[in-house]
Image 1: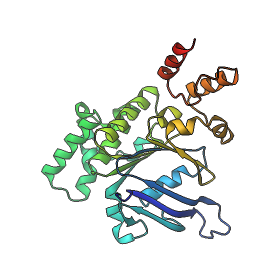
Image 2: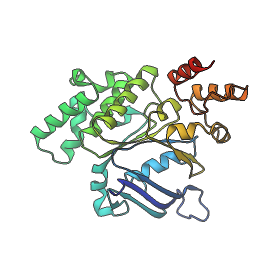
Image 3: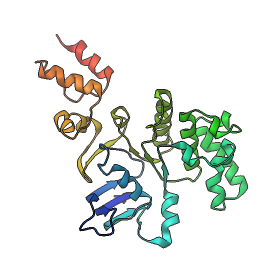
Image 4: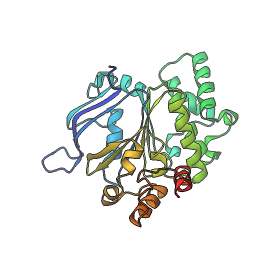
Length: 281
């Protein structure tokens, strides 16, 4: 069996150098993420999900335990660049990641900085912009684009680096509904068509249901993990953790409480609900 692309082994992390007195942001994390998988990480503010994300490309390294990326220990400082070639990161605010005066220059920035030959850079830029649907904007100023378009350019910049995994830390948090939809369509395409491993940190349940696997964090620990259907069927547990569930799942749960016990508790979409209701006598 192939080795996991990302592997956490007994990982704990404290932002204080004095781990006995500093509050641990991660505690005893054991996690494997396979090549090509799409994993969504949920949790309220302070649950540790962004800290977890930053360990995946060695922006942070464990206080104890080990994180492996493509078999490389992230604490191996001599291989840091190799780690970050395997894992790219996209953050909440795309403005913080846009550095050039045109879209194509911005996407080319990363490959240029690692010495990729010019013809190969041109090819990578063309491919990356095509993947995110931004080819027609290649000569535009990034700062004149909409929020969703900016985030797609930031993602294109990551694609041009040819990572095996992209970690997105709440990439839609600052976007309007149209921008959120654009970004999530791009994320799904990267995973399903380009076979890039996706780790999505999010508050949005409607984004998490698109993943292969959902991980729920609370106080620096993984408290739930499973398919979206398995996780979101645990409505009471998620409510106790101060997390929402998809609206349609919540509706199904309320209907069950009122005696409609033929309605499953793991419905995720409106289409599924319609099908179930049509089959009721």
